[in-house]
Amino acid sequence: MIIREMYLNRLIEAKDTDLIKVVTGVRRSGKSTLLLMFKDYLTKNGIQSDSIIYMNFESAMYDNIKDYKDLYEYIKGKINNKKTYLLLDEVQNVDKWEKAVNSLHVDFDIDIYITGSNAYLLSSELSTLLSGRYIEIKMYPLSFKEFLKFNNYDDNDLENKFYEYLKYGGLPAITLIKDKTDLVMSYLNDIYNTIVKKDIIDRNNIKDVALLENIIKYLVTNIGSPVSASKISAYLNSNKIVDKSNHQTIDNYLNMLEKSYIMYKADRTDIRNKTLLKTLGKYYISDLGIRNSILGFRNINEGHLLENIVYLELLRRGFRVNIGKTLDYEVDFVAENPNQVIYYQVTKSLYNEEVKAREIRSLESISDNYEKIILTMDKTLASDYNGIKIVNLIDWLLQ
Image (cartoon, rainbow, N blue to C red; front, side, top):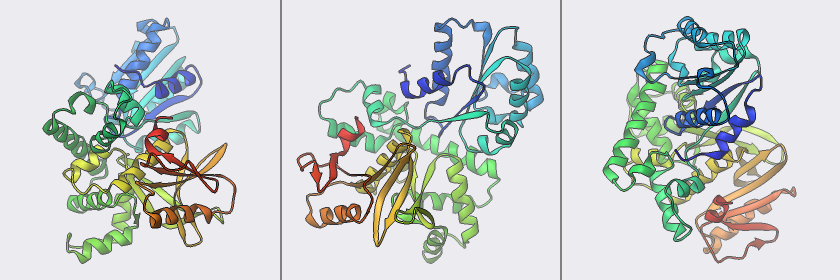
C-alpha cells in the first residue's frame, strides 16, 4: 500500500480525541485502504490487535449484522477492559447504525473511525445524536502529485503524464491497470454503475432511471458551464430526450448526485456584495476517468477539464470554492479559507490576445487586494501582469 500521507496524518492528528472520525468520498477513492493504513499505524505504535476492531460491511462476513442492535451487541462482545479502536468501513449498510455508534461512544472507552460513500452518512441521525462531536475528513481521488507517486513516475515529460491523468482520472486502482485500456474502461464503468445503482437509485427508490442518466450525461458534457434545473429541463424537453421533465424532479436528482459524491456543485457568489447567488452554479465531477468513461472518452473539452482538476485540487487544499461574479465578468474560482482569499482564472493558453485580455479583465474588475492568479498550460509567459500572477498549471499542482 502506498501511504496517502495527507489523509493518514489527519486521522493521526484526531486520534484519541473525543470525536468520531468520519471519512467520506466517492466509491473507490481509497477510504477502505486508508482505514487499513491507519490500522497498520496503530499496530506499529504499540496498540495490541485485541484492542482494534476492524469491520468492512461490504464483506459477507458481516451479513448477519442487519441493524444497530446487532452491531452494538457484536462490538460490545469484542471490547475488553482496554482502550478500544473501532474502524467501521461502509457502515451505512447497517440499518440505523448511528444509534449503535452513539451508544458505543457513550458506554465505552472507544475511539471510533467510520467511512461511507454517500452524504446520507452525515445527514442521518448521526449529526443530531452527536451534536458536533464528530469530524469529517473528505477524501478525494488521487491528486496529480499522488498520481505521479502511485505510478512511480519521475519528473521527465510531465505534460504527457498530465494528459494521461486528464484521461484516466485519479482512482487509485487505475494505476495498476492503466496499460490495459479495455480493463480501465470496464473498471470505470463498473464503478459508475455501482454509484448510480447503490448510492442513488436504490437509496432513493428512483423510478425514472432514464431521466437520471440523461441528467448525468448533460452534467458531464457541460462541466464548467453554468447549470440550473430549468436549463436542463428545457434542453431535455426541447430535444425530446425524455418524455417530460420538471424543475423540481431535476433539482431533487441534482441533490442526490451531490450526496453520492459523484458530482460537486460550486455556487456563484457576487464578489462585490459578498453574497451567494441562487442561480447558475457549476458542476464538477469527482473523477475525470469516470466522466470520460460515461462519454466514451470523446468530447474532451480540455479547458473545462482543466477547471475540474483545479476545483478538486482547491478542495483538497482545504478551500471553500465558489464561482465569482463581478460587474459583468465571471471569475472561475473564489477560493477561501480562514486565512486567505485567492481568485483564480483557468485557461489552456494565453497566447491568443483576445483570451488573455478576457482573463485579465475579469481579475482586474475585482477591487480588493487579495491574490489573483491565472493558471495556464503555457510555460514561457511572463510570471506577472500588473500584479496578477501567471502560473503554469502543472507547476501549481506540484506545489
